[in-house]
Image (cartoon, rainbow, N blue to C red):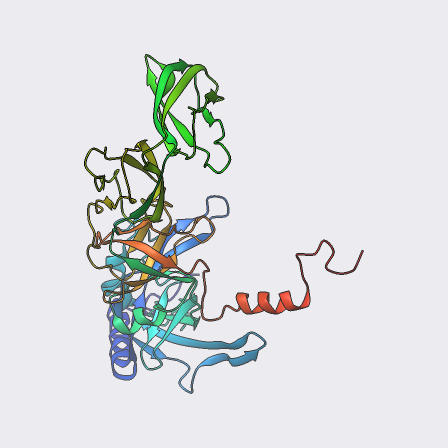
Length: 462
């Protein structure tokens, strides 16, 4: 038996009227909230769990607050870990208003990282301006009231206070974005200009190795061989050197031998032995200078920052008749000078020469980091997101994008902004990831006072 055809059970005109009345009442008695859809940045491939999200859009929409007498939920709970806020908020929004003014802009066909845009979805955020709080949608009730005149007109969003977990929030609304500026696992980086000039100090002595002659370059080396030099007489300093290899005709051989320390006090030419490295045949001899002084060692006083190529090094000249020494630096992973080797110790110095090292290609930093942009360490490839940047003090606060996979930053490496192209070098940083609730250090210090884990058995004497 069918329904009575003379009663329409809700004509399109009646349904339109109800929807218009609801929309008007929401505008009269509601509150303008900001709807922020969740976008999925990264999902685990096995369990399909969302491990990284971002919120970078915002849509204003009127909503009626169902909990008119205050926030629902368990309220504020005092626990051993601090205050835990369990506020909840239920709001009602117009289905038509959502479908007309929000859904078209978050169509999954146009935005790859949104999976559902036709209705509000769990995980989206609501900014409640009266309390200046962010709430996360936990459940969307779409059948209440239940089919008045045969149609549904509203969504009821049941929300809980949002708990931040390193999501990217960049809505361009200052009141919202600044709420999480100091939240999450934040590391403070003290940056400097992209380069600092290195410095070094030379020492001089007599009885040193004047020159090394490579008599045979050998063959078949897979790694640089070890160079051994016989010891100096009592009171002298032992010389040391390293072998530099090259490939000729597909065979790796010794190219040259550079002095690390030219030694002192030698009265006869020391014996040079070349061993190891997987090859054979290399041989070398040397000459010494017994009377006059030359540069026998060079120590790096400051490694410098920002060297991307070998810098030029010059030494002051010795008195008339002397020969200027020649040295060459080696760079470390952080683009600074790790050591200096001696090509020619020179001759005729009466005082240690002054060493002048050329500046890095750019001595100052570039640009201004932007809030929420991704920055990358030039050496470690560590990826982080900008929380704040102070141009005057050059202090950059960042949160790691993937704490499980990050290697951490290296002192001296460059921090490059992906959006701003800003570049500065790390002078120093706090290697510990911290947040305002973390007490890891305090717990560790108290534990060390109770149990000494450096002992083989901290729980007894046996």
